[in-house]
Length: 326
Length: 282
Image (cartoon, rainbow over all chains, first blue to last red; front, side, top):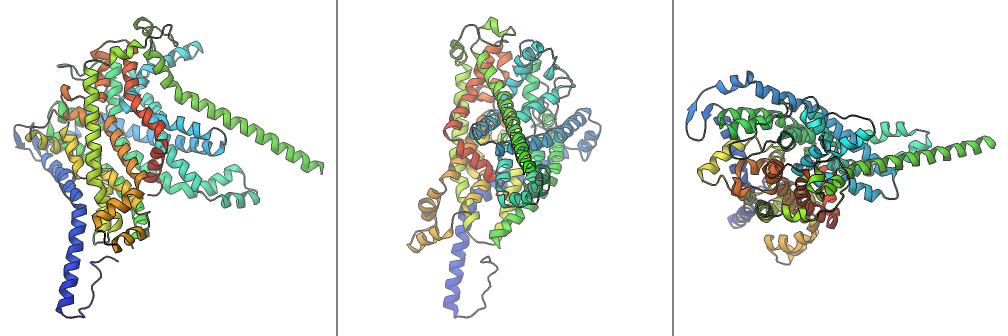
């Protein structure tokens, strides 16, 4: 019950009435005071820029001149090859990376529950790559997989297997990024592990007595119990992949050998636009070519997709908030 | 009798086989996960010439590479990263703790709506609001520096608010009530009674925030000019800007990873509890 919904009938004299009103006002001020950083922050860094993004999307703006252009930016999006390339690649990454990470995370978590000695060490080893700065992890992977001196190439060569030239071939750059994403599976793994350990033991014991095999126990006990966590991981995974910027940008830069030296700014997407993602085309349009109005249209595309998945998440959080809030 | 005995023996044999399979898989995965880091470290101490070959093991150990790398630009990038990450973390704590406390402890109309807004803000990709924010900071003449990334932390960070709130609702209200009966104001109750009990969560959000900034690439890339480059931007351009040999690049990369490794080994539990808190308890 919230104070606002608690409307006491007017019982006492005016004196108790004003005292109650004063107490209520003081309580409300206290709430406002504690919330104030966020109320300001929400306005300045969430509500205003969101509204402004919509406004700028109807303009041509390069920081100096602003011109209203109606729906021009939107119609340009439909015939902008670079943007379509970015959307295709982003879609590829969502479809491949998210299931790959969730399934692999679940797999290694399941493996961890089976191990008694050394489980803690293995857990640390699997979690560690997730913490490594994405830029550093990407540089290491480009080195590891480079054709001339890369250790992965050297080892597979000696075994008689030939690896593709991952970050220099248009067909293999995204699979290279997928390997990198699997390496950084730590966050998904920890969440899956916690979920698996939360499944009541008694359910497994009862099923074993009934003669259920390992697969049956997984299919009919584990999966239904952890499915909310699976859904949560998948949805947050989609939203994260929509923002996928650092790894493709750095992989392209390091593999192509082009740096941000004055006058030689790197145009994202190397090799052949295969690593171009939507956030990169936005960056390229907005902050390299200063087509800020058009960049806002691309921002709204990202926003629309992210919002759909956020609504899905909110439904789940509402169930949790309901426990204590009502 | 003999039937059940052979069944049991078969079961034991199968269990043995399963044990071997599980542990072999575990060792194989562990080796593959560690390999990139091991090769990075080995290459970092190779000579220039050897780094251009396909050798896996350094013939001589050139620890001087770390000294060569850690000079000039690298020192400046490190200072910038440290300033950015530390100030952001302090500002985030000061602004986010009271908000999380209010969302977890006070009962007021619109509390659920406020929490929903926090989650939405947390999920909003940073690229969406980037253009208007850049324009604002350009008007304030702060583009080129890292202030556009640090100042907003004074106004609450959605992820930290969310995580802290999730922890604070698990602390029984009786402690705070007792303090209030003793005449403590709400601010004193929060600082003296509730926050000491929330130390693990405070440590988790502080570490997450620090390393979020330490690892951040997109936002400094948009704002910072070369004088304000952070380590993340510097390392991404290191190979072309300095030399093409991989040994120095790997040495620089190793130096960016080092703080993360040290903190991880000192405070592993904090990290893992924090991740669990975000994912499972909702």
